[in-house]
Amino acid sequence: MKKLKIDRRNFLKASALAGGAVIAVNLVKERTGRAYGAAKDSKDEITIPATRVPVVAEADVVVIGGGPGGFGAALRAARMGAKTILVEKYEIPGGVHTSGLQGSAWKRVGGIHAELMQKFADTGCIYVATEKTLPDWAGNPLSHYEACLKPGSAFSNSTFNPEKGGAVMARMLEEAGVKSMYGTTFVDAVVKSGAGDDTITEVIVENASGRQGIRGKVFVDGSGTAEVVARAGAPFVRGGGPQPPTAAWDGQNRPVPGGLLWIMAGIDFSEVVLYQKKENDPTLNKLISAAKKAGDIPPDLYRPRMSGKCVYGNSYIGHPTLDMSPVQGPGTFIFWQNVPYEWGLHMDDKAEDATRAAMAMRQFVDAEAGFLKKYVPGFEKAFITDVGRYVGIRDGRHPLGEYVFSLDDALTGRRFPDAVTKPMTKSFFWDCGQNHTFEVPYRCFLPKKIGNLLLTGASMSFTYDTIFMVMREFHWCTLTGEIAGFAAARSVEQKISPKKLAWSEPLF
Image (cartoon, rainbow, N blue to C red; front, side):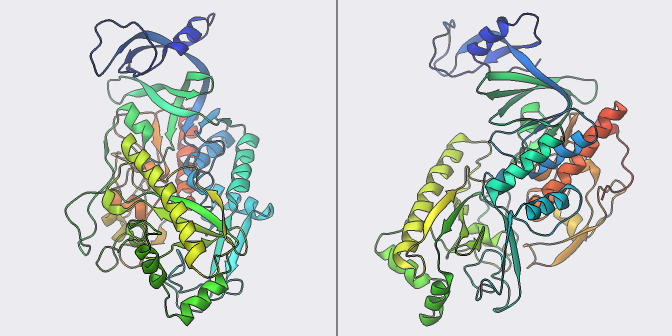
């Protein structure tokens, strides 16, 4: 049985259970300030006696992570009659779009995503900005989404209120009969070896009640960073890779940088535009230079972009200017605060990197807000209303599945006999926004080595460049989650492994 890291509190709690189900585990490398009296411990590790963890719940389908992918998976599985548990470390589902504030309400792709967007609209959750409500926004270099449009172009930018949207999602899960465990962190997986693939029998989680076990038949990794894959011992590739050949690449494989989102209200954007035109300073470089010279902003806040035509992830490499988008209502905008690309932080698997990013991004938010109020016309009365609960990760672990979907698969429109949807069309940053039509095979949902685990969202079996281009946004993550939930429920119904499930026609 797999070695896990459990503290003595759970051992005592589990020992007191009369006849309750428990998981026996061995304890290794547990750092703690408590004195356990372990003998002959080395300087850098201690040994804690074997203990037992109570199994507090059991389900047909256990979903780890309540972001768009996990939400779609849990909702679909439950609606198909599978007893379903959802584990989410924050207090609401939705991931970076609720807890992280992004709230993207763009085009509907059908299924649960279309239903969710309609519920958002019905509950007054969606705010739409257009060329009529926000003149001079299209083509403005400060715009996150519409900067590439010609000035004066028509546009429609839809967002949903993150807090209200999270409440809507939670209610949908509850109505479907999903048992949601919020404020609960996934810790580890208990894996049983098999003649072929191994099997996850339980996952270990931790919350206010301590460490607990959850038993399941099929598990879904909706963590966004392949946490379950890593803990279960399935193979994966660490995040990061080279930029395209057109970029000024220095040979280092760095992850696409993560970012922290924050919201500011009380902004008079018409005054910002008046300044841009009057001073011929569309990117606010004159103001930025003045603030840097005065020492009012740190040097890493606004950085030169990498060179090269259509550099992959151009918006995420460096911000010479503001990066903002309308949200929630007039005068309110969301801002992107991205980790400097050159730092090369692996926030998904290195605690020091995660801490550095969290601290630096909070400092950047404070510095940028101060700069805006002091230097930029139209921001004099502005104020921060929200800061995301965490720094989002765009490029974490990439599981090696039964098929690894590549950028070439998407660019060449490769077809697959086990395609999960009809051909999809999407534009990519990589080649200047060109549209490409492609299919994704069911095998991308199936990690190697583990037989009862399904992948979804940003944790699917894609190469590092392709996951960013193809399946990272809210609508695609929700769609892949629904597909994973369908596969999980159908596998339970047929009493087979997800890898033995026949997939011969698209679900959508």
